[in-house]
Length: 429
Image (tube, rainbow, N blue to C red; front, top):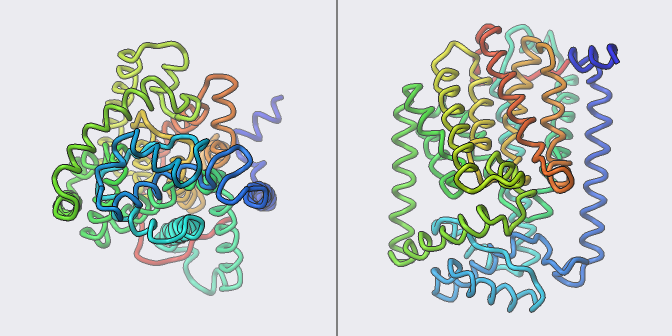
């Protein structure tokens, strides 16, 4: 028992060979599961009677309404359900449309294609953006002692790169996102890329933060961090981007689409979140945890609000401190998903840039007690989060994310600052 505890504390069990073996096993199992889902489908419908890509069906159905000249229709659950049944059959489950109106542009573009092709384009395209983002995090982080070709030759760099591609593809949230046809790749790509560019191309970072408004629940703490750290140009660029998106959307679809959207938020809040019709075990938030354990809505919101205040306070301290930039970036990624009461296991794609930022910092300057094991748990948790919550009523993703956030804060006070540079190589020991 003592030896096992020491292995977990030190992270010595997490060798390079074991990392590769675990990642390869997860990737192979995920690919096999997805292939089985596709080959056993009856046309567009899987064995459980759901459209392939499940949640993507609501994006496609909404897009068809836009092409019909009725962009407000997706916000009416009855009309949205009717269109989904028209496309996929009377027995298809209902998938609601909950996005701001500017996301209708993407939905309409995808609806121009046959459903299967549109799903493939959506997932492949956003997966590519996600991988580019991970590569950008690694390329933007450098250690002076390992950046010369003499110290670390190109052949070794290629091996490191291939390992990180494997880790990025095998990250369990990738399979969850693909299985649901969701937008986690895009969310992670926008957040991670914005953080990479924040001190290099400030306006671009602000624009990327602005685009993240298509998933507004993940942007709650971003303005606070930008203001607290004095990054006003990024703040202004994000605000301007959102304003332009609103203006263009209003000109394209008319002001009534906004009224339809705001009216629909009550359905999202009451039915999908507070009543748990979607399934609280699917939602990885403190709010859902409280509701699963019998708390009323007011108490659940009070607990979530207290967590938001604590996260905001911690982020203000972190971003105003002398902590390394990768830790600040990772802290914002973790806090962004912890702060929202409405986050699913496929939204855990946001953990990917957090893991990458923490990993580059740890490999550059060493890991502290429990940090390697906690990072491994954070990588694995999307694989079991929904199942464990269904059986035990504990959304295990929440305590794991909180634990890593606390370890990150501790690391920020005990390690010297590590700068993020414009170029360089990342080395994994």
